[in-house]
Length: 260
Image (cartoon, rainbow, N blue to C red; front, side, top):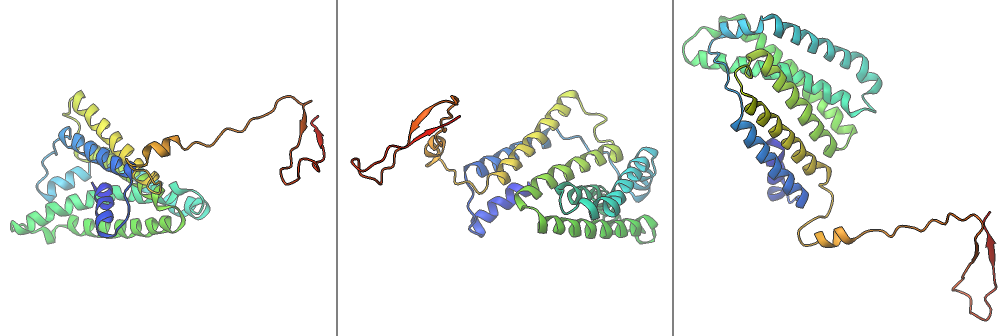
């Protein structure tokens, strides 16, 4: 809901104009989010830091985290200095990959905070401080490279691409870490995928065409405002008389141009 909510609030609070395609994009984003919530998988119950530790130590997640970390280091130290200024995907992929660690850290810290108020010794648990350090490092890295991307590329391109990449990584991380989709039916899987694609379409309409002056009032004029197609002469041996309207008819010279 972040993209449509920010667009709606900007139109009311900051005076930014939201055209017809932007409103349609907000509507599609809300519909897609609703469909995803209806078909979303149930979270596997993880209530203690010990359970969270066992989840993080599973071989599947360790391999997944190692691949993401290697990809992130490759992007930061090799691809970013060479192609970061020219390719919009480099910085945004770094932010999205790091987002997998930040989301996992937030989930673990949420469990730690609940345990703290329940009187559990969470401050003595090493996982708590590992999650805090991971969260601070990942959020700092995300903000850094997102700002770099915004300084170079158009905002209307940055946010939709970042939203799609980040959401894809987060969903994949949840599948591998918490196994949320194991008990899902085929209908729920299809519904979740369709909802996600609907959100992508809505975000694209919201940001890609935000500068167009399109509304219900001028929609017929916009559709009818078409440039005339120039006539291309295919005959290479056409004799054309050139007309010069600035010369009077009696003084107008006859000029012929032969195309060959």
